[in-house]
Amino acid sequence: MSEVIQATGRRKRAIARVRLSVGQGVIKINNKPYDEYFPRKAHQQFVLAALDATQSLARFDITIKTEGGGQTGQAGAVRHGIARALLALDVTMKETLRKNGYLTRDPREKESKKYGRKRARKRFQFSKR
Image (cartoon, rainbow, N blue to C red; front, side):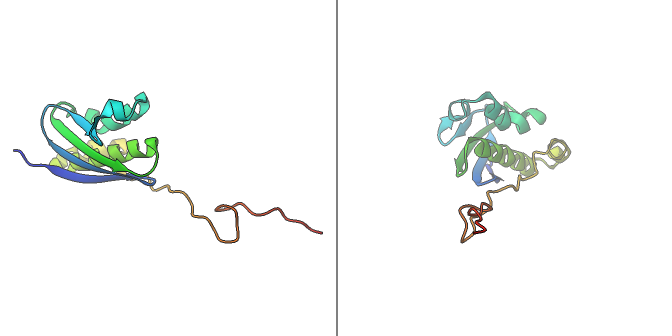
């Protein structure tokens, strides 16, 4: 079984394209090891969360291309993409992934700026006279 599973994960403005194949557990994000790309421990735990929940950390090699958003958004997108790839590989993992919230896309995005205003909601100062 040398098939490659592809999935896309999203969070806020970040997009992560995940390629999952059977291997030794090597995780590369934008051609860097995941712990080098995400130096913060919280982000590293985000990346490994879905793999830990399904006990499949050392079973797969994962290659990820991520763009847009910030570090936390990208880490969330990677977690979402890995969860979707695991689900495509084995449907029996769905209950575990769903229960932990790894399959739910975080829909929050920045509100767009409105014309005639400084930002999305900020108004100019009101003067009565």
